[in-house]
Image (cartoon, rainbow, N blue to C red; front, top):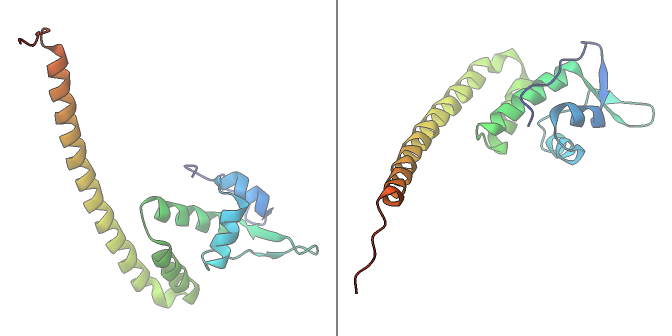
Length: 138
């Protein structure tokens, strides 16, 4: 995933290939996200090709952040469903994001603890290598 998506003009429409290029996702992944109900093209061209709006890119960028932080596809689908229902679901969406953030904070703490253990082991082995060479006696 790229860190940011260049924001197109509000009225601009993009093809699936252009969205793929801007997001770093494959067209297959974009189609999967559509089938999963996470994104919906803004419409179709006369030739039946998908077109996306600027708002679709912003939403997709947010979804990619959720995925990168470990949110499951099922939870992303639930969030997308709530979003589609409108402002009456703001409280439920906020609760979902708060829970996800708490889970993320817990995982970050676990990763930091694990990194400390690895650092200690690395230091241990480095000290062993730094000791003067000793021959094993028979």
